[in-house]
Length: 329
Image (cartoon, rainbow, N blue to C red; front, side):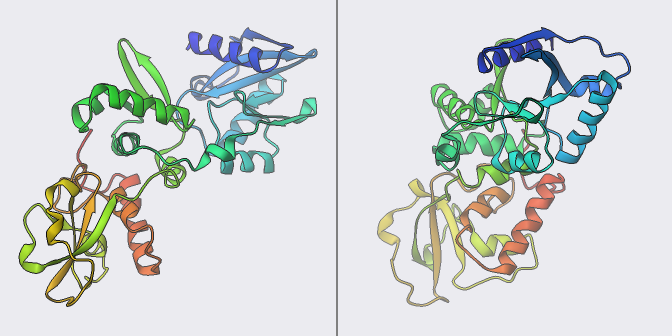
């Protein structure tokens, strides 16, 4: 934790040329929860002192953060500034509405007690840049991991890519500023300061649909490697009704494209076949795709019943009530 405090101080000094940062260790009268939840740095700019606090783990909700900052400020008689590694646009907007001082390294600073509000350009430009497929699958594996972190060596063992490709994917996620990477001995560990549900909402704009190509096949051509997809897969986990033609998905390299028809002639004798960019069962232990893949494959379906069913299965994911559906990491 000490190394992290020193690093945070160095970052602040680079951001504010006239900042003087010192180690803060006067935790008397602060609760253990507050001491362990944040890294603290004492900062002085133009003879004004304040405490910069950086969350050690996930970022707290705004009401919790406001409550914590008020307590710290009251006990230490100093302004308190929130200093996370990254900040989503929606979170920044919420902090501004609550007039919560914050600094995001080299990006934004809102210090009303100093009359400072800066915003670096470029955030919106990079906000919706789509991830490569390895980066997307690595992010999905993180979202499904049981812990709020993911060892990269575990991803190398599980995902269908080389160690070099996974390392590039890790750097791509880190560059998005929604993730950060730490070292644990000789291993890289992927983390995020966003809760996984909040992180997923930010990631959806950067994720691609798994569907590479779509067509129709005669029902007699359906084989074991093809699994229920779309609304039909969703119907297995919700009250949604099945549809015609029945929808299936398979990895794109599993199919001879000559059996795929571009037109639907008979919805009872033909099925829709989605060719996916990755194995539809990569993260699933059942005979249907995993929840996140289903959400991404149905992004263009604007049906209230489908949206409600998807919200329901994702709620089970965040509450870890999905049973044996998802593989364990």
